[in-house]
Length: 411
Image (cartoon, rainbow, N blue to C red; front, top):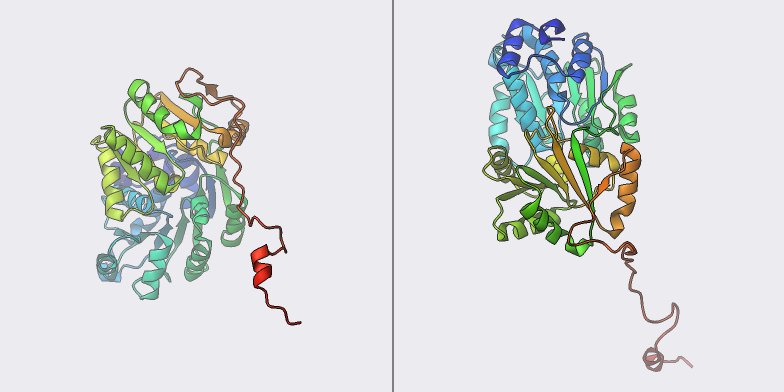
């Protein structure tokens, strides 16, 4: 199928062509006709399947005939809620690229950046708004955002949005929009809380599921290293010196872990930068640009910071800390080996992470290849450390001898 078979007008097709796309992905092929028919939609599709264009193109098409109202007269007709600042900016860039040959105005509002320039743009009138939930509600409270004219509401990366605790904000935003609207929910995974949300906010939705989350790319070479937790940094340095080359994305579970590994790699003269939620928006954008422009070849990130970000030509992913949710493993490694290229995924497993490996292998129905030849092997008998709570050295309800001597008697 070609894009011109999807009933998109010539100016949108021209913009698509200039972005070097000619055939739609499966999620685009299935979603676009349904969105153009004003159906509510629930879409389960992994990162990298072309989800943004799947809702951006039909939204632009639906608004195309009403693009010429004066700037001041423009009302927000399409609203996209997104969990992170990076994803919000990425979606905005997509909408602007595809609506290049129209008079539709798109803007993004998000926390971690000055609110005043965002107020200025909103006061001039916009057609399409992409927003993080917190900043959207702030601006609505201050009367800079009016959602009374929203015709299409998109909830992107819904599972991550709920994981980050935005459920109440999302429900509130949905209620602020008109009751008669089209609602589109896109999510990488479909846990119960996403299904519950869908039942509450969608009306008789069509369901689309693209490449179930349990599948991993056939062209990704997945290697597992059993290693003591204390030796993970040494193993990482060993592999970077001898085995893993090119553009590398390293995942750590915590912000503290990201910072610690970044400092170690910088001390060892690697070109490295990092991405996590405690960094300001400018620093995060700067880190991403450096990595995308090949100024640095190693990016260390938490799952939340890296979710949904498009990074092309990634040679390898390193799971420095294994994720406790097996679907997260699939999303992480799915960033390499794209567009028929070969990718590599290296995962470090300490004694306390063995259960995560079992869950991952069960989900992907594949036995991971174990490398036993590295210099820091884990003792097969090693057990996860047991962290006992330190209690009082005295038995409960018993006083020390000193305490008894001090006690004054009433008799």
